[in-house]
Length: 250
Image (cartoon, rainbow, N blue to C red):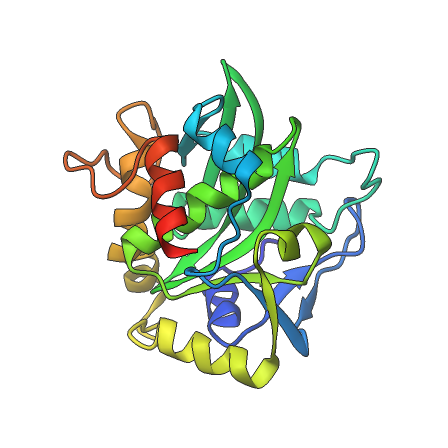
């Protein structure tokens, strides 16, 4: 059974998100961590090696051009992750949210090959990172760097990373209490109304912050994307500019 999209958005608005025990699990459970990992948007750690990789534009980065493929890639097993919490029910739910303009992806390409990226849900000025994947060295780090920079351009105030990992900590993520998280969440989603009827809420999409952050990277090639192409590029859209912006704010 598909998770109701309005229920899913309401869950995010109060600090709860779904998980499953493994890819083939039939049940979904709801999680509310007592300690929450977040990425301060002015505290992203840009190492010398990552800065060099960004400035060289070794990877091409887009948004919302291959959401379904990123979602599927995140759900695949890997040598360091034999199972995944993204079961088929959760996968379908986020595809639905993407179709309604709430779930977004950052894709990292090497030539024409999709080699990494991430996806999550945007609501007001909050972005809830769900999963990231890397099939090349630094691909997920590049995706996160672009996400942080574009979120700054869009005026976001909260990047939720859910659970702390060594990988996230190396990029500057910190862990805060549930109470502190809920305060940040309330401020970031304070203007979002989720009880005014399914049609109205879902038709509204993520809102202006997500439009500013992701639409310039979607471009005209974003066929089928819920976000229209942007005629005005606001903020950094090259690896060099991303590195420069992050250096100025780290």
